[in-house]
Image (cartoon, rainbow, N blue to C red; front, side, top):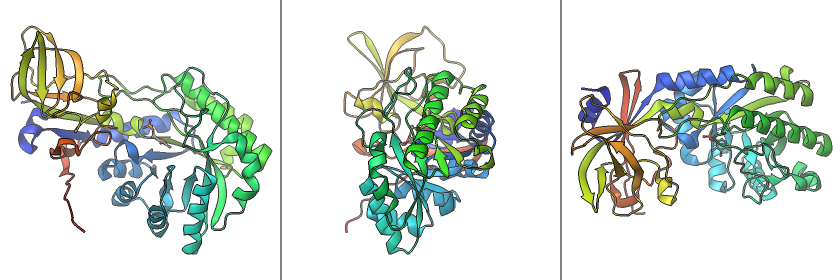
Length: 405
Ligand SMILES: *Cc1c(COP(=O)(O)O)cnc(C)c1O
């Protein structure tokens, strides 16, 4: 029996399996692609499983979190508050208090009012915290990439407003301006776009420092490192990135090699994406008006709930037992939910399948569980198995219990 089929038999289906060896390998590859001395934040949004986060912390990563749940996951993974960067456009006073009480001293702030909120909490707690200005840059960077800035946005300060705001930004009690944070690109299509975006980001930060006096001790240049998602394929290797970054930084921030400023990157999908696989079981197969539907025990409640929002992804399905044969025909792969939106993939070429057959979807370690409609239709959350190679390290399941107040 194939290992994934065996895990499903042992622990139940559907289940996610995460291989920590792959997390460690991804982390090492990304470190190799970046200049020495760079800091790297793991974006918990991709997958807050504490064991994944712990493997990254062991390799020297820090934590980028946006909620109390992610903060608690970071603590469960062994992170200290001093290793955490708290980001997000809607930080509430309660979340900020919990973060500050937990020792978090670095915040990315997205507006003047956000900075005030952080400052109020810091003053109440008698501390001073470091704040990076998240910047929404006006000029386009890499023309070839999907960018999240340049347009009106809930994220960051429109960079053209920063000079006028500077006196007020500097004067917020409890806070110290510590640098800039730009995150404008996700899942970059190639290394060239990544390099162009970073070059743009670094030049924006240098200009802000020069023109507004914004002190830049920490420059978080964001990410955009790509990874295959729910389809077969390998993580890209960024062979030229390190040298390109060094050249741009030498020109814009000549003292960066000595740590002024410290440079940081962020990644979720590159670090956690390829460690994960969703293993699930065929519940039923039916024909309707000439089309074959394969009904799985995992739908958008378990995987890629965002496809329920109309973004259907090119998903690949792998068959774990070797003895599937017979003529391959197209099938629509659906989940068990009572909504026509519960489609995992269309037109997948599959051999005849029967109830009980186990199939799996690769590269589901990032934005698998976290991007799913876990509450929808009331199925239990999938089991999560953490392994090193074929050695099971832990088995868990997130539980929802309604509590009446
Ligand atoms: C989502 C997010 C990331 C991680 O993006 P990936 O594409 O998973 O690497 C990093 N930084 C910020 C601010 C984010 O919102």
